[in-house]
Amino acid sequence: MASTTPLGAELDAPSLASGTLRAQPGTKTLKVCLINPRFEPSYWGFEYALPLYPGDRRSTMINGALPTLAGLAGHHDVTLLDENVEAIDWKSLDEYDVVGVTGMNVQRERQREILERLKKDVDTHVIVGGPYASVKEEAFTGLYDTIFVGESDETWPAFLDALATGGDTQLRYEQPEKTDMTRMPSPRYDLLQVDRYASGALQFSRGCPFQCEFCDIIVIFGRRPRTKRPEQVIAELDEMRQAGFFSAMVVDDNFIGNKKEAKEVLRQIIPWQKKHNYPLRISTEASINLADDPELLELMYEANFRQVFIGIETPRKESLEETKKFQNTRGDSLEDKLARIQRAGLDIAAGFIVGFDSDDLGIFDDQYAFIQDNGIQLAMVGMLGAIPKTPLYERLEKDGRLVEEDPNCNFHPKQMTREELKENYWDLVTRLYTPEAFFDRYFSVYKNHPEFERKREEICERAGEGKTIPTLGYGLILLYNLTKTLIQDGSLGSVGKTYWRYFWRDNMKHRPSIIGFAQFMNRCVTHWHFYTFTREAVAGRLRTYNSG
Image (cartoon, rainbow, N blue to C red; front, side, top):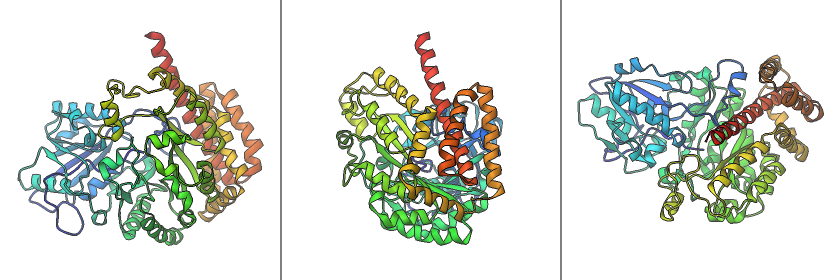
């Protein structure tokens, strides 16, 4: 997953005194607006699922950059504007002293559009930062007054102090040292429209000890994981609970990059969850070597972690070695490791990539078989992409294989054409997200690992999600909304009929309970998003092809 780092980075700014990082009171209180651009529809966005949930959910998860930057801004008056949950009121932006725009790689086009309009129509100090600005500064040349590159936990407060006191500000900030995470203040979750998000986000650590060639995490954050103290994490969990969140994603790119510290924070989360009757369902991202540590698996389960996202990438050892993802090649098989994680009671979502130099056209069948055989229900499959400043980008640039004008497939593969890669990719995800393939994966975990079934029932009962009227009501709302949507779409007799068959044949066998019904309906809604997004994306490609 792309990082949710604060806006940018820090350069030539003096480090703040020891203690918590935040802006210091100056002679003026600045009005600051921080903008997170909207995402284009994607598998990650759940655009077709969110309208079916109770309430007014508009985004899957908060962008952790916005509340983090607000926490660092001290006494200044900060407004957080997430375009994924509300429209930009352009006329109001003139009221602010500073307007900042963050953005990840997938937001780069919309990020640029917002900056262009700000420079043209809004009289304010415009700043830009975030992961994409950190790897490709030149993409925004001429569209900002100040740019932040890399981490900005020291330079952001220093910039605000200078502006508030009438001092000189710089065009470019990049802090010379990595942030000391133990000095980070709590994010301002209270400034978010919590009811419009499905999940909150919390960052425990930055950095990853591994060296995957395609990854920009080690470029921005380095290979030495830096962590917050357990008491910081507990304080943030408390604030998320009080703000109204019911679930949280620990957005570390590798939660177990420092296993010792991860275990310590888990030991603090467990009693906190018990004390408050398990108010937050937690998910995270971790490397596959999680499977090799039984103690860590048990601690995550006891801390109410429900799901872990793992970068599997490919079942082919030669492709893993090519991309320097050696952690996936050590020890026993990937299949055995995944089974241990599932038996520990953790649901697995996973990332997969096609288009490595070692990939021939057979990789698409290999990926399909691996995903189906191992019950990876939420399989996030993507084509290999070269992010600027990564070792992959530099290698492909040297070889003359970059195709900068195509953001969806920006390189020439070795053993297939670009069109073959794209066509076979869409064929693969179409196969993966048929209703039959999706629910075969879902129930295969229950069939193959009875321990998983037992632990899922246990953890749901422990958290009060079992035989309760609210749980039944939640499932019935999903059933009603999904049925209405299927009727409107004309898919009730095809997709809906398949849902019905799996419910009676498999769900009533493995999970004949209220929570089992509610979670099955949740999976149906999840599938509907993946199925619909794939169908619309493929149809769009065909329209483009036929019109061309």
